[in-house]
Length: 159
Ligand code: THU
Image (spheres, rainbow, N blue to C red):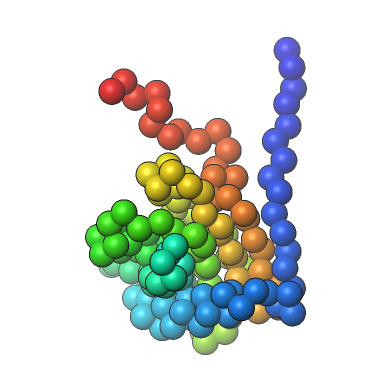
């Protein structure tokens, strides 16, 4: 028997130390929260993905009375990139949330979105940075794959 441990590195970055691009991503992600359709949870999530060519693509959660069709902001952004920017490479993905008009502190993506992030990284041959944006600080995960240890990445499916 051997016991193992996994460590997940991340950075807490105070707003005063944010690179300029974080400000632009935050503005975009906040705008995305305003486009969110969340009449059931009232939890408005915005995602802003920075592509390698500098373009920023937005995503926001889209809810449904039947609940299970609800799509998170992160997947909305990543799938929009697949549809509108085929072959594009995602460099960073920032996530912001608001409820009742107030910022929610750094929220973390759900497991399904992590799975989609991992496949996006695999597809584009490069991981991307995930930024959980709070009001005073951001939590930065340099490689989206770190968020999903012991992932199923499809490599065991016979081709
Ligand atoms: N949600 C997201 O859009 N992203 C997350 O990272 C967490 C949760 C959405 C799904 C649902 O519309 C609402 O937030 C409450 O769970």
